[in-house]
Length: 274
Image: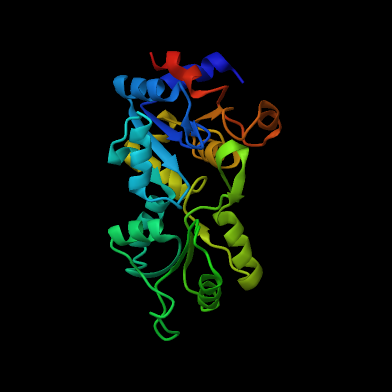
């Protein structure tokens, strides 16, 4: 890896997209360099965006958190795996009635985008919802699992917001994420969903549409090799791995998903902004 050459590649980017947890903050604590770096991105004239796969919190809760940390927090800066899902469903005319396996925050976001999330008693086999959408449901229960399985056996379109197996929490702990739910339904039904979040082509397309830039001039900064860096490399973005989250230098060296740059933390990129 030619660090100087790749720092130059980063400096030439017109848009910077940042993952959230593990990249800009850990749990509920922002890294000290995050706010100065993000403000410097905006001051440099580059477009700034955030991208999260986590669909267990509402859009407004993310924007409130970013603002509370002192980060630039305009609504158009935030991209979520749910945004990619809304866009796909609308393009494919899959709606407005859907069966959503997601918590109340995610249901609210779908409602705000014109979808009607059907209750288990609000559909029948002759008139099923247009799609089953699986998110990170922190309120998952057996009834939702049972209805989800029954719908999957009817062969309706099946979409997942993202496929992360684990979600990071405070103090280095993790909880099961949507990827675990995907495996549960795969074991029961034999079906796997079309995944919208990182590292999918749907996520990459949503980013390039928002950034209004060719991918080669978009920097994606994240701490996960199999989502952040895999997407950046697959779709010709400038992938920057930060070692402030779940990935160690040893893990990075052994991974098939190779970033353009590896830095200890996001503040190490400050000088490259010019």
